[in-house]
Image (cartoon, rainbow, N blue to C red):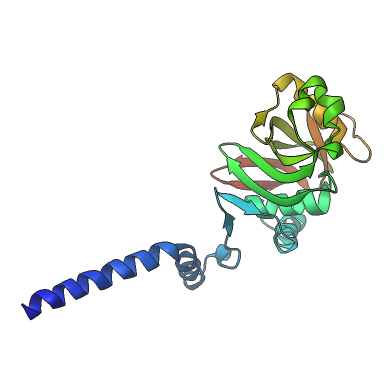
Length: 223
């Protein structure tokens, strides 16, 4: 009888440990990486609900350091960044294309596209001008999600080409996206920029940017 209680007690303990392990799996994985010598050990991804990752100045700094490592002739051929590191570096520090009213900015990778989401005052988007009668379906402020790809036009100039836009639950028709994106652009518009793209000023040593497997890989420009 007591042996049964002991077995039940062990079973309950194992279940508790399993549950604790599940809820702390990110910390355990980071700990394993640190002791295994994985260079990503100090850049654990903290995700918001739904697989979205918050943009922060700290992640932007990590992204900057990773990209700048490519500037050395003896540096790596590419740098791998998390969505948060890439987006924080590009959208907060480099591109600065998000409207000033943007709040709660998060990012995620879905298949081969980078998605950036923020709560924005829709007047900053020029939604009434870009969407016409469709703007009557929207409020004054909502969550705006942009999904697209990143590329290099020429050394020093890149673009975030927007393929999907959602404002709240409303999916913006594909034909309207270029008009909406043009109202979001800030600063000088580089030659060769796609009509549905936001410009990105990049270091001249960046040759290519690819998105796959939930991460962004930035390649050095080989002369």
